[in-house]
Length: 308
Image (cartoon, rainbow, N blue to C red; front, top):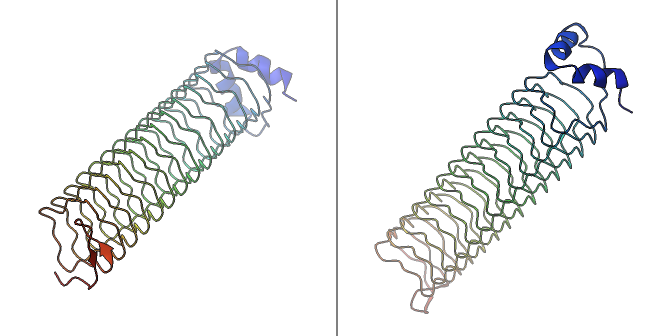
């Protein structure tokens, strides 16, 4: 149950509250279940507070200190948390629909099962955060730091992730259908069994990423870096890979029917048992490329390993 005295003090204003916190930093803050909707708490210090199931919808907590706070299942829809510090906080199951989270620090924060649909997370830091099964449909996430983040089973469909950093992130089984990842860094990322249908990955860095069993049909990978990437059994049908770097990549048993591989670098890549029927290989670099048992653009089976 929330502490009534603490709630009264908080509603008297941020200045008085923060002054009290400076002299009472060891006191446990219990504001669980309180209604703070539409309140102005800009720059407030609520670090380590218990705000379990609290209502902060439409509130202003810009630049607030919310480090290690408990916001599990809280209503944060429409909140302004721009430039706030939520590092190591617990927001599992929280509702952040339409929230402004620009430049917010979510490093090592638990956002599992959270609703982040249509949020603005541009330039936010989510390094090491847990976003497993979180919903980020249509979220603005350009220039965001998602390095080492757990996004397994997350829904990022139609999200904007232009120039985002997702290196070493776990996106296995994630939904990235129609997501914009132009110029994003996805090196060493786990995208196994992810749905990237129709995704925009122009000039993205996917070097040494694991995309095994992923769906990339209709995706745009123009000029993308896929060197040393693992693309075993991937659906790349009708995908634009023009000018992409696939050197040393493994595409065994992949479906590349109708794909555009013109001017792509395929040197030392493996296409064993892959389907390349109808694919465009014009101008592609094929040095030491392995097409063993692959179905070639003209429909014939390449029975012998390529030597050039």
